[in-house]
Length: 105
Image (cartoon, rainbow, N blue to C red):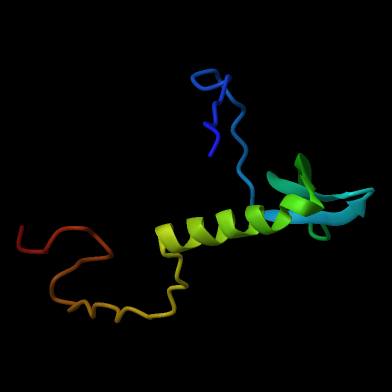
């Protein structure tokens, strides 16, 4: 197996907060995936997002790419949290108008 080297290791790379996939399409022998990032600008009708990263993956390598993503998912053990934690009941004698201390303090 050939040794893999990364000549840009240690150099600054742009950071993007990715929260979705905007578009996916085929172009020649590649699969193009465009990732989106939130801008924080919203109107009552729309949410403004940026298309910030375009991944161009050769079709012949897509299976390898997919396996890498699956491995990340396994390592980080992504699970949806659906448990509702019980809320703590506060005794009215312990608080006064929502203050953070007990009335006797």
